[in-house]
Length: 141
Image (cartoon, rainbow, N blue to C red; front, side):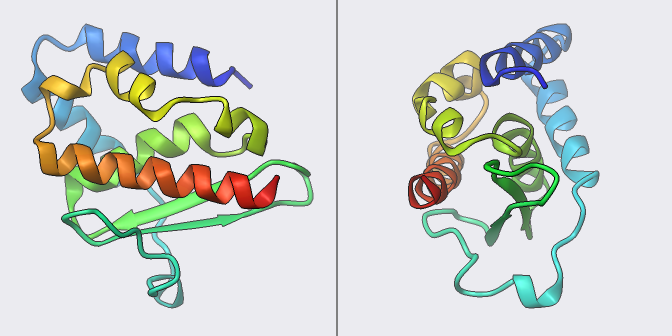
């Protein structure tokens, strides 16, 4: 598995191949279409991420075949946000708590060039999702 830094660099490289932010946003939305849906019972207050303009739910668990690693799944009622979740899962899912906590959320945001593409409200939501992922990692470590 690639490191978090390598994964961020891969995603940044994919974005660099797309000529403008309209196409990049379309790409992010497309990534969200591939997310496996959460069950109805997983759409609850405990899994809901606060601070997002849209409804967002993040679920974490561990698997016997990846001990010590956190696996994340997520969902949203907004297509763009589902794509953002897909990006975050690609970066943070199936990592150890230490790996997750080693990343500064602003660095991810800057390396992917999202500042130019997202409104302040969407940016705050993305940070809220990253904060939830890191909070989960802190509790697991």
